[in-house]
Length: 114
Image 1: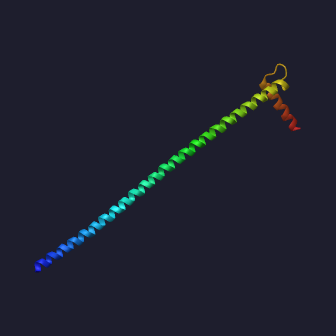
Image 2: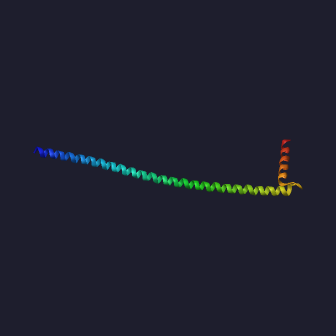
Image 3: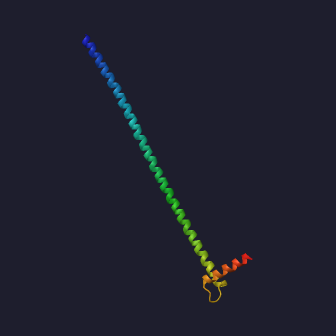
C-alpha cells in the first residue's frame, strides 16, 4: 500500500509538473504569437508610411518642377517683351541691345542720385 500511495503521489506530482510546464509553454506561445502579430502590424504600418512619404515626395517634386517651368517661362517671356520694347523705342542707331540697356541703367542711376 505504501508503494501504491508513493507511486500515486509521484504520478500526481509529475502530472502537475507537466500541466504547469504545458501552461507555461502555451503562455509563451501566446506571447510569441502576439509578438508576431505586433511585428506584422508594425511592418504593415511602416510600408504604408513609406508609400505615403514616397507619394508626397512625388507630388512635391511635380509641384516644384511645374512652378519652376512656369517661372522660367514667365521670366523668358518678360525678357523678350522688354528687349523688343528697348529695341523699338529706346535703341539709338549703332547701339547694341546690351549697350542700350547699360546706357538706360546709367541714366536712371544718375536721375536717382540727384
